[in-house]
Amino acid sequence: GQQVMQIPQYQHVQEGEDFTTYCNSSTTLSNIQWYKQRPGGHPVFLIQLVKSGEVKKQKRLTFQFGEAKKNSSLHITATQTTDVGTYFCAPGGAGNMLTFGGGTRLMVKP
Amino acid sequence: NAGVTQTPKFQVLKTGQSMTLQCAQDMNHEYMSWYRQDPGMGLRLIHYSVGAGITDQGEVPNGYNVSRSTTEDFPLRLLSAAPSQTSVYFCASSYGAPTNTGELFFGEGSRLTVL
Image 1 (cartoon, helix red, strand yellow):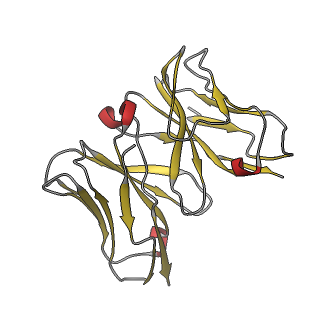
Image 2 (cartoon, chains in turn red, orange; image 1 turned 90 degrees about the vertical axis):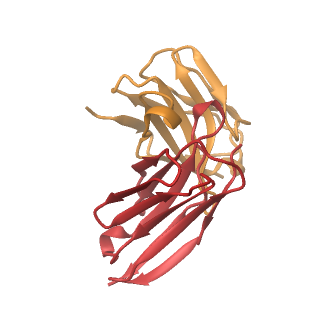
């Protein structure tokens, strides 16, 4: 199946600091989705990126799809304690199903 | 709408026992899938279905069976539970192919422990 590396695996930040997680693939991706999972919760859809070089924003969150469609990133500006959770990238795989990266766990110190 | 409903939320089994995790969605979604989540491993696809009567294997199908007799329900059966199946299981659904029309809707998860 589609293999993606998501880095870092963990990130501690002070509230107000910025945070970025990266999703890297060795092959070209048709599209990619991002999900957030709060501690003890279930994954919740954030966004889907389809076009090369695409940039989408949701308030303090900025999502990018690389020009070569082999990588993607999620950047959070001025983190808040409500941003705590694990962020997963999910590229398309076999059978039009999603495969998930290992996730980046974000911890925010108030 | 209730969305995606999973039962039970928690279950403890002994090795060799069988059980079924239930999943139901009321959104008339065609696609349904089962993932397992282990620490540090992300979510791995077990089985999925593109519509009633159609199922297919995902990345880690061994030890699990599924069926899709109705659009709403997609149960996951463990035939002979093993400690390696200790995990959190998530059922998910989507209106169309997840890679085409967008988001997966997840249930709240079922935490399974096999002793």
